[in-house]
Image 1: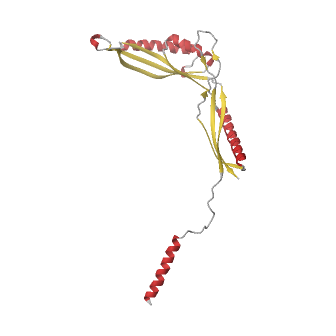
Image 2: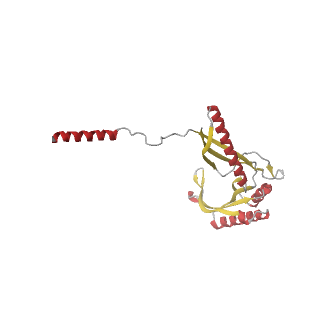
Length: 244
């Protein structure tokens, strides 16, 4: 009798174990995948630059470090005076680098100097970062600083002082472009477009040149030819729309 009872209990336990391994019936809402269309839109706004940034400076060298420094300091003061004479505010002239270092002079056959030991000269570099707010005088300004002794100009970049409204417009255009693309895709696919379920808008924040524009300056052949051109501010919009 005891053996029979033990066999019944064992059978019940085995059935319970098998039941626990069986697939469970759905007890609630089923998992569903939302059908959607993903698109990217682009908004671009053209801007006219009203700012220019210039890295310019003086590079001097001499076998005597004191002489190299004095020469550099004299030229740097002349450059600063030329900038202020043309209306550049002192707060728009900022020292960005000042370096003094030795350098050995070499020729085709090696070091140049007495006993082939080479000649050491000292290099002094003084670079300033200048913000130019009157682009009509940019060519004149460059001519003036070059005449004052600037022999190291590392480039000119253009910018816009106020980009708030342009960024708003570019965002609007990007979203409208994304919506138009989504509608087109829905029509091509033969489905009905639903509400937007996700949106991500982003921008580099820095307008890029379009390399088109007009000459800045009075047209005199003696002036440095500088063209500000146009800048393009670009905003991208990634959006997802539900498919009804």
